[in-house]
Image (cartoon, rainbow, N blue to C red; front, side, top):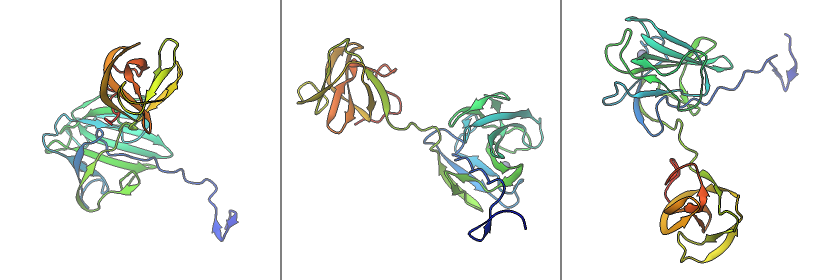
Length: 248
Ligand SMILES: [Zn+2]
């Protein structure tokens, strides 16, 4: 036996890298039916479907580098994408109707890589999805939770979802901006934020209409508990409500 004994166990020379946190390979919030079956090839692959799914976007289930964009024609996977996630982990997306990535491209969570189709040895539109480690098919996990083996289960995607808050920079052209206890100029002043302050916006709501540096808006940004500022004075990169930020 070689290796260092630590607490009675042999420490491997190279510890295995942690698996990536894989997410459901569809956009945030979508629910898909995933089927596993022991006669599937390979056995641990998942076939995903939902109503009228042909042409629906398929997204990367974890960050990585696209290392295969291949069309096998009328056999096997048909049009498929493989993403290398490092550490020996890869994912396969098969029977696609088309591609939205190319080999060598870096992708993150939620990146659309192609569209659901029925290419290759498929009898109807679905996404055939695999996770592999060092080339061998492994049991699929989403957010660390094992998929159902064997059977059909609904999976709701948390892939590419917004963090739920937004960011902005106060721009008043000099004077401090009044912070109010509620979304309007009629609420009590509870302090100020200096021009140029970077703020985290927990949620947005409608209140008193204010004309500021960025035009006229009735949107108010909550930047803390009981702390609101007029969005008309905040640069957020969005005209109106910030996508992904909840309403208060
Ligand atoms: Zn399949």
